[in-house]
Length: 302
Image (cartoon, rainbow, N blue to C red; front, top):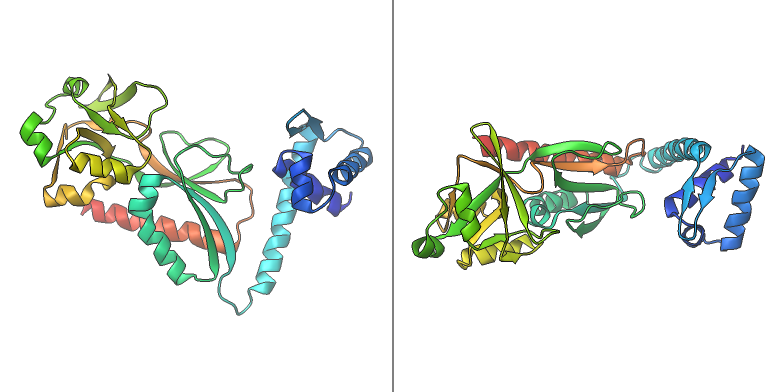
């Protein structure tokens, strides 16, 4: 079995289709197809199933793909070790982080990381949607969720605490909700929801409650939501880090503090593919962010 053919199979399956694989490999589509067919004949089994839009691995194709990824990872590690002797860290990382958490919590961490490791290129995307790490070539993603996917490595960055909050002006005019059911009659400001109704989960004295709300202002931009709350447009349902400083200054106050609120999940996770070779840059970044998250957790509990 030729290592070149195994490496090409990895590239084809990573790309998802022959046209994209040809672009990445700087070959013609016909040439890629020829080498794939030749590899299948040498193995004696079909390695991929072709559809009109995508190609998917067969069982044996998937096994060879996993072996190929491991071999490629070891080769990359060997090249990196040789190239990195006596040198500072270099490399490129493609990151996907949530808009709110990324901007309001992670931004200083990322800037600190970049100052510490100037040779590492960060390709950073702020987005909230669930991403396919493999297809979109994302090395590391950060997401809020309750149960991370089984097919990814999930490193815990700490709990996400939602708060019901409003500005002083809003409170003077309308008051704060005294109980969960009061939220139904108040203008709600929160992050984007797929359906028109929002399902708010609340835990009160060990009991689980659900409240369905119809927000009057939604956005995936948490900086905008913060401004809307400060402007007195309604009651915000946002993670505490969105309004942490204005809570401390008294510009915003919280309600329902005896409830544990959850909308999209209760934990923040750093996600990456299992069995993927991590460059020194990636491994350093992972530990750097975990250390920052641990420090933040200690600060919040003091």
